[in-house]
Length: 146
Image 1 (cartoon, rainbow, N blue to C red):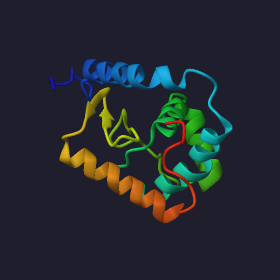
Image 2 (image 1 turned 135 degrees about the vertical axis):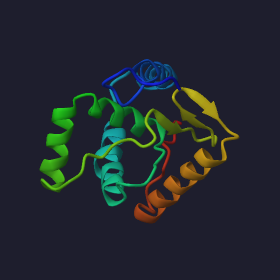
Image 3 (image 1 turned 90 degrees about the vertical axis):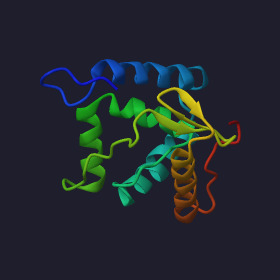
Image 4 (image 1 turned 60 degrees about the vertical axis):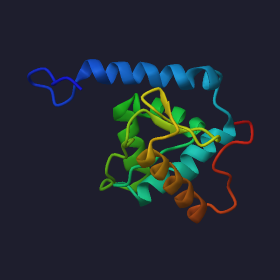
């Protein structure tokens, strides 16, 4: 990754490219209005999971990755929602790593690039699924339609 320009802590060009790749991978699957099931999964299952483990690197399923990304595009509303729901002391729940999700076939997509041989990302994806299963044993991690 190139050095960030003076005054910035990240390489904005690289981040923009990763954002575009992320959108290209997810957009064809979630362009329509999100389902009430996906909204419920994001609001009632994913956010509490992230809130319970805010420092962990988590790899969401595609429907949740899309909603979480869209929610964070309005940072003031996102922050207001989190603080209204979890209290003023709630840290901002960031995607770490950003632009990342996992497919039901086991592949992890980070910055739009599918990786099946990335040991670290595969481990993070599996840990995320296990955390979900521990917190929500009766809720499937992936939607049945993929």
